[in-house]
Structure formats: C-alpha cells, structure tokens
Image 1 (spheres, rainbow, N blue to C red):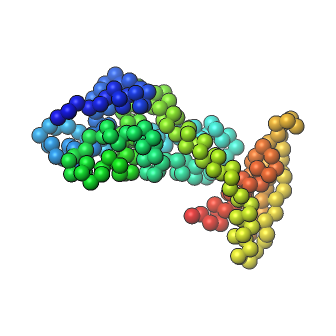
Image 2: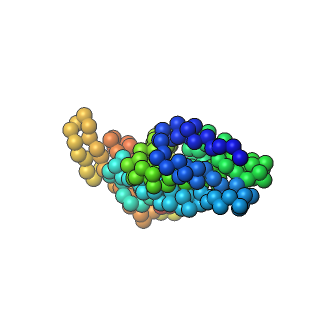
Image 3: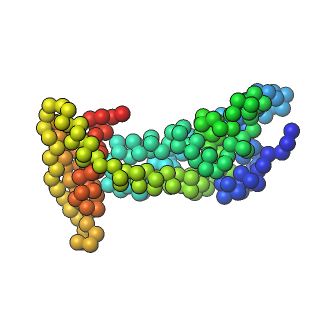
Length: 231
C-alpha cells in the first residue's frame, strides 16, 4: 500500500495538520475501507457528516458579514446555491483533489476520482478534519479561501441578469398588477448612498437594497421572481 500524499494535500489546503491521522481519514473513501476490512481503518463518512455542519456555519457567517441588509430567506437561498454537491465538487476539482482520494479498485476503475458525490464528500471531510485539528478559526480560514471565489463569481453573474425584464415578461403572461417600484428610504452621503426600493406586483411585496436606485430595483425584482417562480 503506497503512502498518502499528505504534504501535497496540505499544500493545496495551505494547512499543516498536527494529527496526520485526521487528513488520512478524510481522504479515505468507504470503497477503500470495504476492500480492506482487515486493516480496521475508518472511512471519511463520519467526518463528512461533521464537515457538512461546519461548512454551513462558516458559509452562513461569511454571507451574514458580506450582506448585512439581506434577510434570512435571501441568505438561506444564497447559502443553498453555494453549499451543494455541484459547487463542492467544483471546489475539489479546482484543488485537483480527486487524484489524492483513496478509493477501492472497483470505484477507481469506474472513474470515482471524478465523481461529484465523492469529491463533495471529501471536501466536507477535510473541513471537518481541519476543524477537529485546529479549531473553528482554522476551519473558517480554509473554507473562506475555498468559497469566496464562488461568492464573487455569483455576484458577477447576478450583475449581468436583468431581473426587472424577466419579471415584466412573467407578469405579462398572468393576470394581475404590473410591477410598481418606489424608493422608500435612502441613507448615506451623496457619494455613497444606499437605496431601499419597495416593489408591489401580483399581490406580493418585496424590498430591494442597492447602491443605486436601479440596483435596488433589480434586487427587489430578483426577490419577487424567487417568490413567483421558486425554481
């Protein structure tokens, strides 16, 4: 049995484990353990369970600090868009983590190193391993390094979506009130104002926030679309 590439993975995470057994466990898939029961080794599923909780807490914390004006529902939707199998697998692929996961021969032969479910689970297990080894501060640091690029990518994508036009098109296909926007509050000096806009449409109300009236209207329209068309 070859030794695990621990230094390489530690370099990828930019974290050095005091207890190397934790990173070994985090990289050990159940298929590997099932093919070698005599070793008495433990797979990474328990760490995956803990890592899911730590990941949701850390990403929630990051979003709370970054988006001080958003409500609980908006923050929950953003976290769900970031903490899911697809996004976790994207993080793992960016780190080239698949090559370092210990898989059984059968799983490896069927492309297990590239399976999104395995990659996502390993990311969660590694976050838990860091949390146990170095505490919440260490787990927060590596999780932030992993997920801030995704947060920024999501922000850039949202900037190019015309939610007002999408809402207008949706409303035109249904009977009811057309969208109506009104500025209900503004704060800050002229060079750095924040605007709050209220939107009424089809018997619902939403409130948008932005650094311009247009941005606040887009935010309100985005929230209205989420309520009218949750998918």
